[in-house]
Amino acid sequence: MLVTTELAERMSRISVSATMKVATDAEKLRAHGIDVVDFGAGEPDFPTPDNIKQAAVRALEANFTKYTASGGTMELKEAVCERHALDFGTSYTPSECVVSVGGKHVIFNLMQVLLNPGDEVVIPAPYWVTYKDVVHYAEGKCVFVPADEASGFEVTAAMIEEHLTPKTKAVLINSPSNPAGAVIGREEFEHIYRLTSKRGVWLITDECYCHFLYDSAPFSVASIPGARHSVIVASSLSKTYAMTGWRIGFALAPPPVAAAIAKLQSQSTSNPNSIAQKAAVEALRGPQDSVAAMLAEYRRRRDFVIRRLRQIPGVTCAEPKGAFYAYPNIGAAIGKNGIQDTLSFAEQVLDEARVAVVPGEAFGTAEHVRISYATSLHELERGLDRLHNFITNLG
Image (cartoon, rainbow, N blue to C red; front, side, top):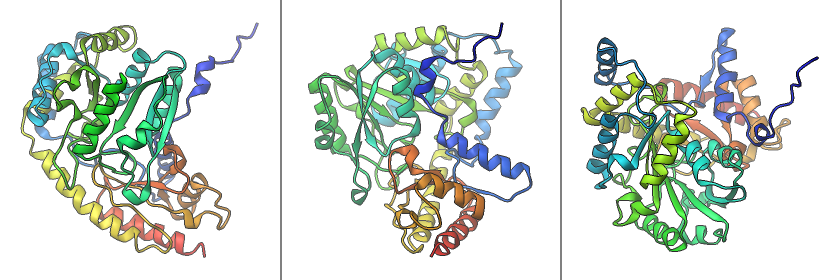
């Protein structure tokens, strides 16, 4: 008797990550010797700093290769709390910290431990591709707040308030944002906190790109006095320290939430990688020079990319205030040469111009593509030349 191949219903609630698909498609072409300029990767092109790598080597030499506590070692949780205090003036304790297998894992776990079926999560759009899927996987409902391109995609408390209902369980904010690089100012972020705390709603702040701001100092809404009771910090070492493959993220949350995540991990991942945890301690407690160096290079690249994008006929682009993405509006190309939407645009520009971009549909908008400028100026110039020629030749 054949075993049924029918999968669980929950798998129909999620899709393959659009960013991962773009990376896979580009890699397939490269495997056949085709020259592709990849603007899809959402990771720093810089190497992990040497002091961090050497900490991993020392961990191996010391045979630190066994299981750790499911929510991370005490040493790492203390280092997370110390770094957040130094950077933002907070005062978290290890009981309010849990370490996970990357920032994406943090968000996934939070939705699993916070949401009941039908609970709503308010999310500004454009949004990171994973938000929608992990909310749906937890049987929650996404309520999107469309942000205005003319204002740089910044969302306000007034905009969020219009979307709050009795079913709202959380508001999920990513600032600086992926994909648009939008930054919510300190004063507006405080307004959002006052709103959510007044309504008894969790405010989840995804601080993955918090150190990559171009025009303002890093800020965490969790630093507001009293905020830690209703604010949850979700963050990662992946971007800040060029540690994407090391898979270390963390949450700062009230002890019951942190404990619930650790409980979930005890039955799923067991614990974050032991060696990566030792490297993470060094990243957080060691020199921070690499962060400033990366930010300076990202600024240089941003200025180049925005200037070049705005030279392409019909293309507009809001200036990103943080992170390392540009989110140009290519709506003028839709309807030409069989391009029906940004998905077909991305497919065609990869097939014909050999440039990989991520379609805006994945982020909740209909006329944009995401371009990562976490690559060299040489590659940026080559790719933008190709993109310019491709769009111009559409007629």
